[in-house]
Image 1 (cartoon, rainbow, N blue to C red):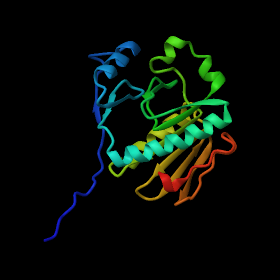
Image 2 (cartoon, rainbow, N blue to C red):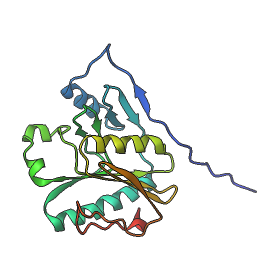
Image 3 (tube, helix red, strand yellow):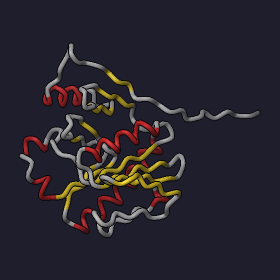
Image 4 (cartoon, rainbow, N blue to C red):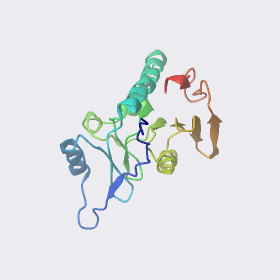
Length: 200
């Protein structure tokens, strides 16, 4: 007897258009997200809500490993603060995005008033990582990475586990693609950061 295993298909996030009927303030959007904690909710630059289902267990385990590697380097380096996939940031273009991992220079982070840090802080991280799962649409993640670069991110890694590639984003430079790299490095922005690609 042959068992057919389910094949992972790409999932397109649900996009809810609210404007002009409803225009959520920053506080209202934050409260909406708190009321719907089971979903990963972002907001794009035109005010549409982008709702993604929770990740699968395998992807979350790999994301945990990814964040763990960034955490170790951040503690050793000491010049910045790191974030996991639950943290959201309000970018200069008005979008609210939640990268899978992020890093911000400590002086920039500490310059933000404490009350703003408790919600979706108005800052674009210097470094962001997106980890593509089996069901993630690559084009959507590429657009998200480019949006971060356009809003001030200095280095972005889009890790495509499906094709075993890493897309490296930097301002004013063509996207670099590494095929099955062993250890992508963070220089010059993040000296000494080395990712063990086998763990993600």
